[in-house]
Length: 202
Image (cartoon, rainbow, N blue to C red; front, side, top):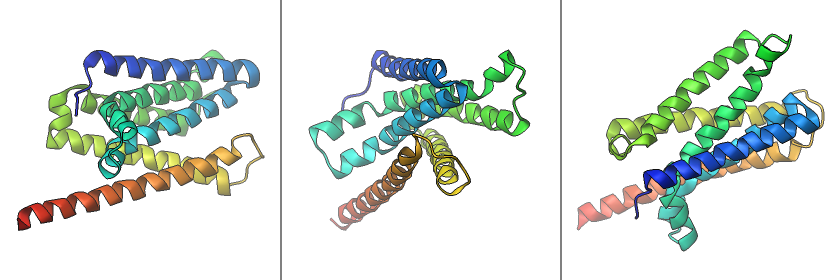
């Protein structure tokens, strides 16, 4: 499988970040800061699902499309990181430019998420880090954190008290996609272990 070059990784990451910035600006202009944050969060959750499932899906269903996704997995992960960073900016920065004080839990969540993002980007920044046991462990923990964060957000909007919004259907779809990614990754792990046992038997 071809290695994604640094230039292509940067291009994909910048494309994702630029898309998030455009969505944030458009959402803010038409509906305000809260809508902008939800819009960017929705886009970043889709980017996360694509990046999270790219390699396992390729191993399970090796087609031209899945191979292309797998080749771009590092760039897709960094694009997600850029998009989520824009979301964090959407929930924190307005408090510094208005009289609305950002709550301490929101600041703590943003700071911790930013730290996890930095760790994720570092884990995918070099081939050496990505190929090491520690690098894979870091990336795995980062993915687990964001999977739980997105799932918790979707469940909160589905079962908690809230007004009907244009995002209601999206939360259902997003949660379904997150669950589907787990099935894909579990199936990939099972298939990989089976291949290893068959190789050892021969």
